Image (cartoon, rainbow over all chains, first blue to last red; front, side, top):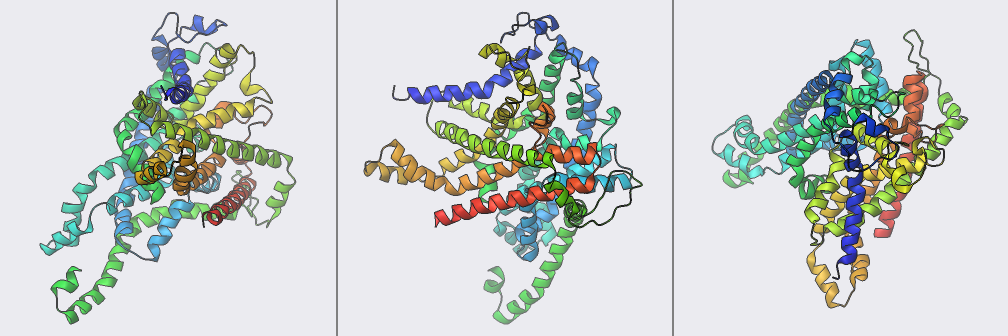
Length: 272
Length: 303
């Protein structure tokens, strides 16, 4: 019974955290008639899935989803391909370059996007890559690279150096040791970094807003924002339905890494 | 260790002497593929962006860009919109960072105890993190909607929250706290779990109560983590764009126009690249200044 105040507090937190989510779900299940009524309720009176199909017919969600998928796959693969060798070097070698590189990762977090996106935009315009998906991929790679480097070098450091030394005692070259000993142990870290980069790109809005102007090339977040116009409440249902569907990839990602989150990833990143 | 232990001394020194340059060369081979894109697309643009702050660059393709020195900064100082945007930005980032920290600390303390429903609460506490910022913004638009929203019907009010001059900023601050709580809670919880149990046992032996243990053991032990996460939160909040853009686009009448929204408008609506870059540089200066004072005070108190 001593714990009653704590349960009250926990319950209050859960209500605060859950209520917008419940409301989003509730809105997604309501009919247009019910949306128009002046007294909204938590539980839809006649729940419907029509909003989900309407969402597809009102906006090109499939196309936008596919474009988001292509951009996210391309930029996560590129990010990891570029970051992997560098992260190995960062984790295994000492020197001034390492300090500069790690310092850069930290500093890059402080600078506002505007100082990066204006010059990038000017460069992309020179290369005629504005309004194209490759242009957005380039921007996303540069944007995720510092953190991907940081993550991967943490994973490399967790592979004991002794294992590589043992391999070289057995006559393996350094490259052989990396391929046969380090790579298999690094696989979970690479997967985690891939997922992180994928989700960063999938969720990213601002750079897409700057780079993509034409509705035919817009990614999912842009298409979702275009959903709402001057009209009243009638399209809120499909909007809520589309928002829920756009969240699914991120939810899967977090379900996968949920255990690592608590103790591993962030604690390590902060203590680094 | 292996080289010196298995080989006689003189060849070992010889081998090590040769190995160092080879290691350095290997490192360069590995670093270059990553360094070139990082320099080309991250370091380069940033330096270029800072440079633009001292020019009159504009979006128009035919515009001749020229060096103007500190003119952009002088213009900023005389721009009423800039000052109101900075004021709103500071209110937003300080309020959100402080309230987010307090709320997250409370939640982390609860989640660190053996309570029924803890598992569910932990999942709930991470969900906002898993959502795309655009979806968070749209979701809160539904929550605040004057007719179809839940806030008005629950409170019995009739306020158009996001279009009201005095309510718009508090409304987005609540959303900011909600969306940023997961990271802060997870980091604080990890910190709590690393506090040595012996400290609490020793405290209990000395007869310390719950509050006393919190003030004398938990807080001092968490201090480095608290300083780190509040600094990060502050930087993230100053640089916030997507959430607020989706929710209010800076309205009504600029009441929620955070510095980043102001910079975005100047650059990509009006095309004043140089002016927006100067704005970005000013924000960096303000943030680094405030963080510097904060970290310096924390360091001094800690020692």
